[in-house]
Image (cartoon, rainbow, N blue to C red; front, top):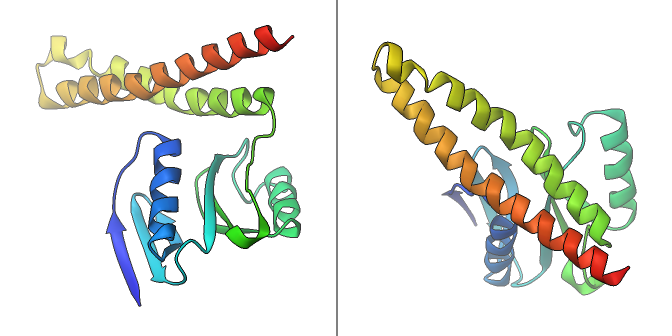
Length: 170
């Protein structure tokens, strides 16, 4: 039995949490494309899901080598979309964490910010059309820039919190 779900997230950690909740209910993600998830029925809690923004697209040599390494460790690539990769591992094999230290987690958050920031800035620049032609697209760009600013600021807060924690540990 399969089901499709359309859902948008601006926070990969919440998306991960939702995928793991679906897994706990016996719905296992088999595919993802632009907010559309494909689930299949299975054993409740069979998999643990993780999502990661790779440094390069999944078909790049470095990313492919990294994903091969993960597969050797029992991790399955469920889907990839641009540089985002959706991963899962059998829960019976134990905990599944991608980031073992503060530095790797900070680097991941920075990659996300560096992906979102140009989009927000481009939309902010295009929103300046409001002043020249008063068109609807300028307002839409302004809304998009504002919407992107929210997750960017939240990721910056996480980075600051982790860097403060790193200083305390040193």
